Image 1: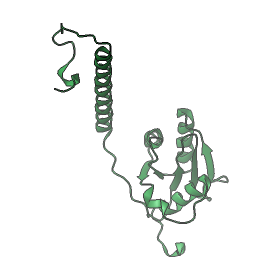
Image 2: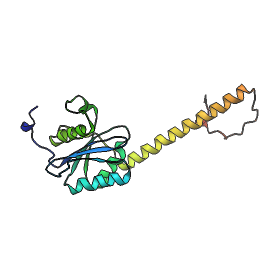
Image 3: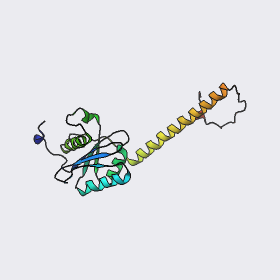
Image 4: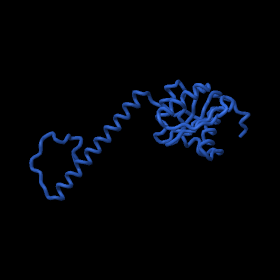
Length: 178
């Protein structure tokens, strides 16, 4: 591909390779003597990452949506006023030129600089919070239902019959077979 023929869309871009234990970040070599850096995953590390990007004049960042690791990075970079592009990893997987974390973040930087990445839809903070709470509630209901079923099984195996049942002791939503 002739990169010189492409128009630069994001001249103030960065690329981040998001990982479970560290994040690799690449910015344009003319912005820093050390254009590729590694940051940890703790909140203090992510805040340092955000400060460094802002200090170097970066305004737009591209990173892949890798598992759940992208979420804290996304939130902290947004808090620093950066435009964060969350891109689907499948859109960059088939492209050549990436072998390591360093090369991956540089590849994302290059693709983002030339506007070759699409930003994924991100719902508002309120909807994200509501969705997280709703999923957590669903997990708790499923867990409670599973515990009740295990207790019923143990009682059957021990040949114990419970004749008296307190009404309302087990909510209808947790009762099996209803």
